[in-house]
Image (tube, rainbow, N blue to C red; front, side, top):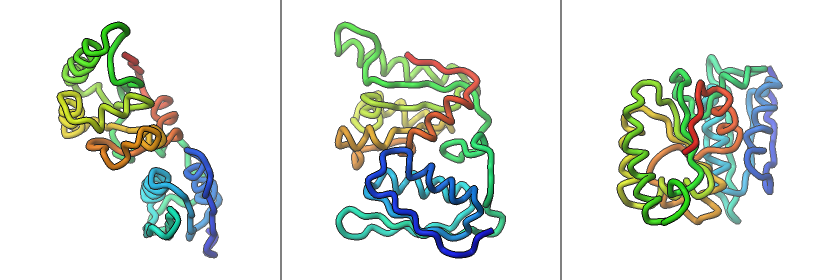
Length: 206
């Protein structure tokens, strides 16, 4: 285990590179590291990853949109090589099952208003899958469902409260200017999303 503090400058890096670079240092046995990122989704994702590996993390916002994360391995931290499959996105520890991948705010093509109603009905019906339902992943326009007040958001919140994991793409939230509006789920990154797709027993894309 390396005890010297390592500085990792991830400013300007696109998702999910800050998490990947942080993982490389952790897998190399780094016990203390400082990570610099230039956007809040990256800061949240790096912090969640490091905490999931047993690190104590201090996150501070500095000038010019800079975020500084200082991390130190705690007792029992997973320092050193660790299988990617053990790093499942939100760290909820729930066994993988059915994953729902949602990339739009409406269901099907045709009338947009009808499509939004169908999506709300779809989300409200998902509890019928029972314990098989594991995780929802919201990408692109699908992230709007987690940020706009209405029946769809209420259905997502109900799913989250029942123990279903909801991952919301941070890059997508930033693109649509919805970072502050997100009302449900974990702000996530592409590494978490790809890992989730790999872990899932079944993937449903409406």
